[in-house]
Image 1: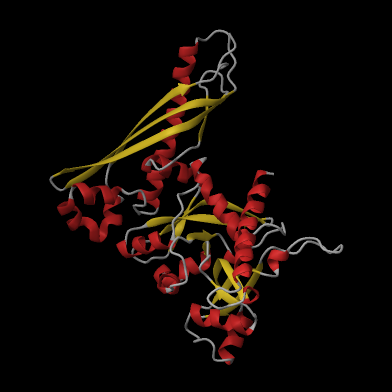
Image 2: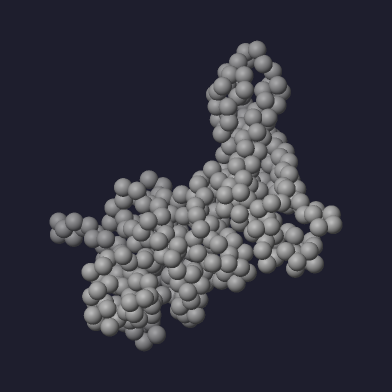
Length: 403
């Protein structure tokens, strides 16, 4: 219900914007009826052989270039008139238009052949890149047009779709605008450690130029519903998708980086085997590099304060203080497990620093960094990392135990 209200409010804002345009009579000397506001773009690697052959026959594609399908999500004067009229079923609040080719701008221009709307991208909210395209084509090449474009907002967020990106711009609910729905989900990182802070087009440009590996938020589609699910690990040198991290991995990353704004830690009481839910109220992390001769090591100091948000332990024989010590201990162990697992995965499996260790070394030991930055991911995979977790329960409610 809350999500539906959010979607209605977002749609109302766009309706208000369109109404304003109709009152002024023009936008850059264009009538409102002529505009198609682009709020979302999906880019996919196209594997349809018949489509490839058709484009080659029409001389719209070079045969050795990757074929992309671009999907624009539009809000137009027609879609904003959504609603039941004269017994008709509700119309979708958006319109998706797709076209294929080997370069983005020609594809967008070809959309003119199928639409009477002038595409207006200054309200673009999200760019979703399909998994296959991200594995095949350098992200610098994929996003070059958007980074150059004067109409495209640098605040647009970038997501990687598991499987096909165009599916994330579809919805079963006619009143829902999928691109705006994705933006709302991205704000959930204030309540959970399983969502990455959003990466905008402007921030991504800097990451691509740094040649350091990094993460992008994943989005998946199952049974017609979208979900933020783990993250994509982007190789800093190749600038392509190397692999995926799951939701638990993201929790570990959030603890190491200290960038979480909220979330939960679920653990089991060691004596009773019952659930204890720790809710994060604050989180801090400090990565400290140490250099002795040619040896580099890191220490990660993590601290958090929070409260018991849910407790299944019922006992008449244990004191309040004893219970809180046990709760802190098992919650701390769970955080340590999350941190250990993600360090093992990034160092041993992917051999890629996506946690910011290289940044701390660069800041505190710039000369050392100059010597190791060329092959940093490989060096990082062999560096010892110690971590310390301090977790304090400051609020436990009025009925932690039945006495």
